[in-house]
Length: 215
Image 1 (cartoon, rainbow, N blue to C red):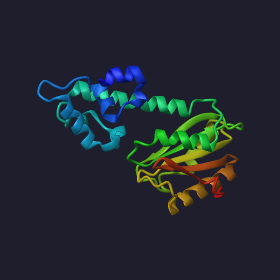
Image 2 (cartoon, rainbow, N blue to C red):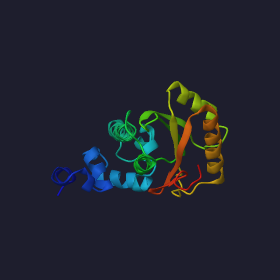
Image 3 (cartoon, rainbow, N blue to C red):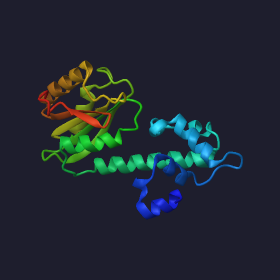
């Protein structure tokens, strides 16, 4: 059964990564067969790792991918990212650390850089807004509580949850993670906005500072 027919009969979730790519690309180029293009994509981005931040130029460097196919793949990645973001953090949703941790595993799975996110909540733990605080090497100089709590005050937030990923796949918190958590907890006490939790995501798992009694 061809990928498109399999998708119709059984749903997109049943398709392999290769089959999904074949559905998106449709056919090969005039000089490069589709199988060669799909193989090159799989070799360059094994298990889709890195595709979350791929550019059109990156994809056009692969055999059989021109501007049209590269733009289609980039648009598909961004489309999926937006759906996941809005599903996880839709405004007004009552949120728990467990629900957020489970869903952020899927959302941050393709990230090759560290991303630190603050989720702002009201008194009933309903989502008010999300703020991306930092990308890349997250350290104390970048993740400034003053900036985050200023945003929280402007949004009339009562609580917040920090979330960040470990691209290495190990969600165990580092010494820097523990220091960062304490800084935000202390700052929250001063301004009256509680740090509800800090979640570290990686490798299909997450670590909760609150569940571990560290907040």
